[in-house]
Length: 345
Image (cartoon, rainbow, N blue to C red; front, side, top):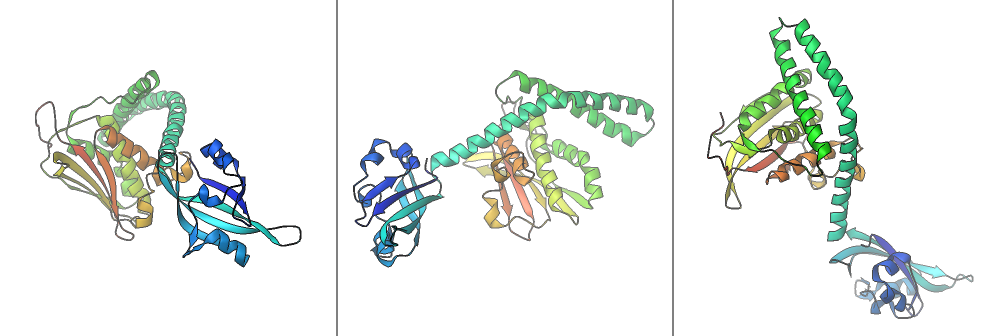
């Protein structure tokens, strides 16, 4: 795949040099192009109706042409070309250098970036899974002690039971993760409304501290075949992102509906915040881990993982937002169930 490359021509527009990127990409064909007019090998680069390379030579100035279409190994891509005159020792123009940088990436580049993100996540996840076991056991021991110490405090015991349950799930998940090479979903018919209520309970203290109010707007929806642990993790990522975006408080609404997508029945789960929203220009890249690495802090990593989990369920995740109008994250999950239709409470 080509990200950037360059070649040089003489005053007759014949190629005198091709860089290693082009040689690697085109092989013998590139080496055989030396001594031939550049447009035998590349499409002619136009600036208006003129050959931009010829124009740069005649006028002795650098010319930038955006959106030049060239062939790539898997499809076509657009490049921005910068044509700069080359001067000899007597300051006379002896040729030109054409530097090209990809402006629209080809399919293989996009797939490569996606795979790189997944590889990064795999490395970090394996390290995390190994490293979290000992602290998890310490937390479990502390919770057992505190439950006995404050057994008369009903609210404390309720939260301690939630912590205990989540620790057990996390420990089982780590065991499965370390013993298998693929993400294996354990699906069963589940009440989405109960899952959402649990998420609200788990995050209620954070919400209270940030002056955030939870609102539920539920429709009559069927049980869904889901892995409750993974989907809960995805929704928690989304809710935590929403709370981080609402520095001055506000409202997070949990809305469920039935819908038809691609002629199939599905359930949508909308998580709507009243924060500043996401600019339209950023919506397309918000699922990418910031700066191309999962180690960076930012909204992209959590949403990337959430989308992967939803897609493993056969669903989709999208952002509905505009700057200043809050953000809605919509999860769309298939409603067909092999167990027959039961309905959420």
